[in-house]
Length: 358
Image (tube, rainbow, N blue to C red):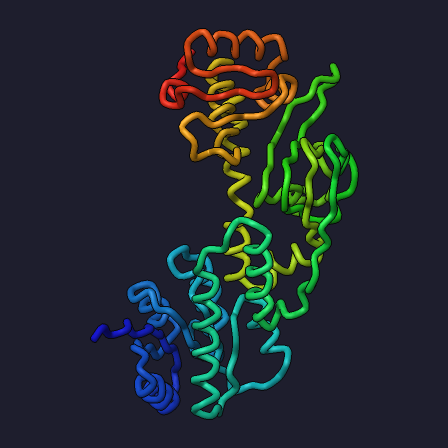
């Protein structure tokens, strides 16, 4: 018979009777409990044992519960651990302060045995839900929304998110316009670009199904788009309201970490792209662009994936002129790295393309 691993709880409580009674209840419910009688000791045990949950009294001598939560939330190894406050006070101001600091729940002493166990079980279950991976499509987004809304502070998330169709070449937003929503690509492809003083386009991002875009201005003070977004083909976008974006980012620290992880895929790609533009040769940038675009193609599993993109768009993505792209692609064709058919670029040798140096 396979034994399920016991969930670990660190209990921080300066009152001996409350600490021992609470620990007994939790141990009888098959939790592994590590007790601490001060905030300092509690922090040490949380770091040492990496528990699944922390239960902490608010009013303690020395480091109080607020300080404990603040310190643990700054440590990468303990920042995502669910945190429940114990308090003998029922004043709303005290409870609100704890929740604003990032506590996941609270219990007012004295509490019933089942009240304690229900709070612990509920918090552990919600934390497990956020550890799983969601699919990259709109069904995964809907599932994430559903599970995020199970948290009390996120229960009023929008129940329905508008899906809007954009025909090929349609402008989604213009550089300089106000940012009002977060965009999620349901189907199709989108490019974002900036225009130079000479009128040339520099593509800052390419997005396909499952990608978020348009969120950087929402994080800034001006909330103004610094680029233009255009549909590269018939595209359907899910529009996430600005208020939902802020709730997912700021209302619950565990939900926020999952949400940031979902958003950050694009951010990492953008940073890599800008580094390539700054430091790599044109040949390297074209090769890397083709390999990157092939990863978003529907035929990515095939031996010779097909990339469909105009020479103008590829030039904007790489940060050069169309003539240079045409010349570089011709060189790659002669070297047997690709074949060409109008907008179609067939990658014949990924390995050699990845090793292009100059």
